[in-house]
Length: 130
Image 1 (spheres, one colour):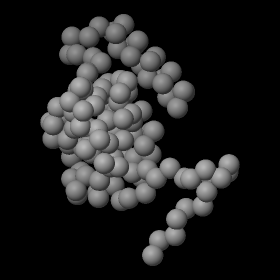
Image 2: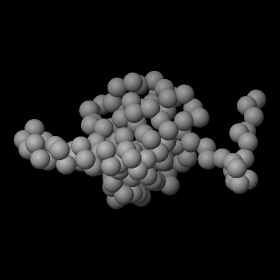
Image 3: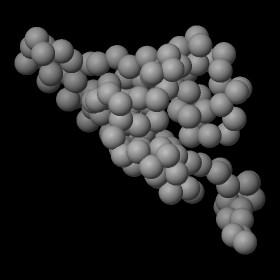
C-alpha cells in the first residue's frame, strides 16, 4: 500500500498530477507521437474537446484539455504537468487525432529571420515566466 503524500505547507491537499505515475503508463508504452509537434507549437482545446472534457475523467488527457482552454505551448504543458516532453507529445498527438485539440505551428518553412527571432524572444520570455 502506498501512503498518501503529506499535506502542503498550508494544510491543503496535494495536487495529484500525472507525474505520480510512470510516464509509459500514461502513453500505454508508446514513446513516439503519431505526428511530430514542435516544442513551441501552440495547443488549444477545440469545442469538441470542451464537450468531451467531462468524459475524460481525471487523466492526463483531461488535464491537457483543461490547461489548453487557452493556447499553450507544448513546452509549457510539459512544465505545468511536470511530465517529460516526450510524454506530452504523445498525449497531445492522441488528442489531436481525436479532434479534441488543435496544434498551431508558430513557424513555417518560409518564415523570415525576423519571425524566427521574434519566436525565440517569446520562448525565452515564456521560460522566464515559468
